[in-house]
Length: 165
Image (cartoon, rainbow, N blue to C red; front, side, top):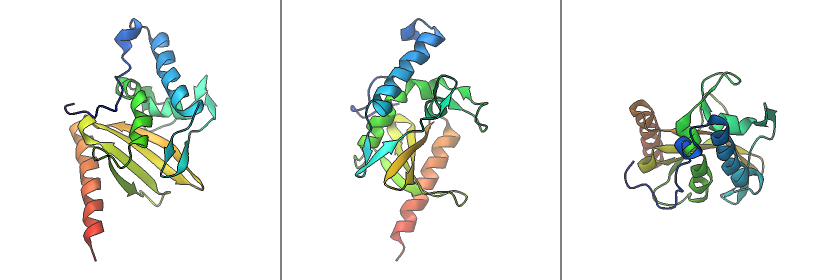
């Protein structure tokens, strides 16, 4: 990660919490709680909401943005996502900054989603449009080459589609 925007806060690292998982996940949750439950970021003039449904002892959205896997309830913790939980709100709030590439994405006929990708930081946030608000859908570290290529191709395809008369 080079040339990471200076508006991104430091990563939340496991080793800064004595390597103790419970202390660490509580610290990660504290960041999420402050950024999305104590207050709400805005995106393009509308609030960004998170699911308040509790899974275990925390909101399902929290578990979704800090874990990976195709099946809800069977996802596994992802340290890269946990470390970057403090980046979600700043990425949303810096829409329009040259470091944030954004484009609409509609997959498999689902609702329209907006992808916000900070290529230099290898991190993307996905929001879903709902009536009068946006919904925090998920995040993606893009430090793996296949994921970086996927996002780059999607962004470039969107750019090309905007050039057509």
